[in-house]
Amino acid sequence: MKTRLKDRKRLVIGLTGCFGSGKTTVAAMLHAYGARVIDADAIGHRLLQKGTGVYSSIVRRFGSGILAGDKTIDRRALAGVVFASRARLQQLNKIIHPEIIRIIKNEIAKVRKGVVVLDAPLLVETGFQRYVDRLVVVESDRKRLICRIQARTSLSKAAILRRIRVQIPLQDKVRMADFVIDNNGTRKDLRKQVAVIRRMWWTS
Image 1 (cartoon, rainbow, N blue to C red):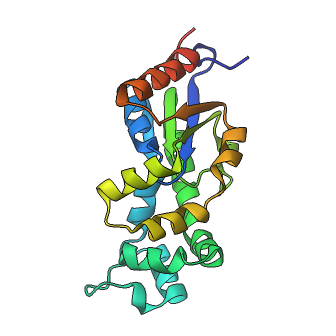
Image 2 (cartoon, rainbow, N blue to C red; image 1 turned 45 degrees about the horizontal axis):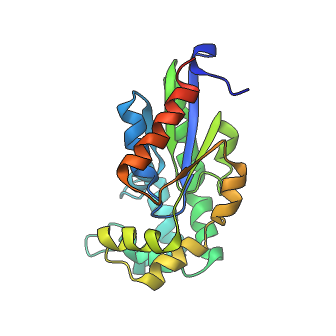
Image 3 (cartoon, helix red, strand yellow; image 1 turned 60 degrees about the vertical axis):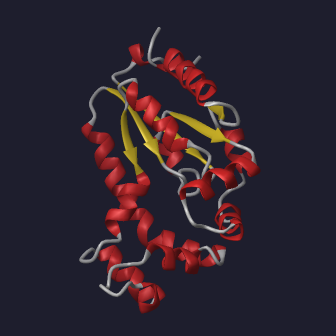
């Protein structure tokens, strides 16, 4: 029997899926229901800024070729390096993920009651599912993933596929999920599924 919010003061929902699956849209819908959303990607971007220990470690490991003219980390250049192989991505993750996890744990601890949604594309890859009460996976077929990403970025199809391949296969995440959202339909269909989560875990 799933624990409902009335039975506890705080519920932490881990939200993940493949690159471009639509989990950020789902997070926004959950936020509209009153959930506090913690965006792991946004935390990671802050840690890449000049002056942080993470910045220094990344530049030492991957070299000055990942820097823009103003010495900030060019995220596209960094992605081009680390998504070229799983080994390089793991090297980056070893630098940045411990700090992301530390910040996330602190942010969760600040919330005494209510629902917290952790929006994290690599939630399973980093083992952070240990810290959430429920795991929600957003799935979408490959064609829609590619179209969705190309609509908002300038990434080529090959670059998109490289990013997808270095992640844990979606079907493995689905097997671990407490709830799976199918994002192959309309925005209305997506909203209906998010409403089911609210009925299951927010209310009696």
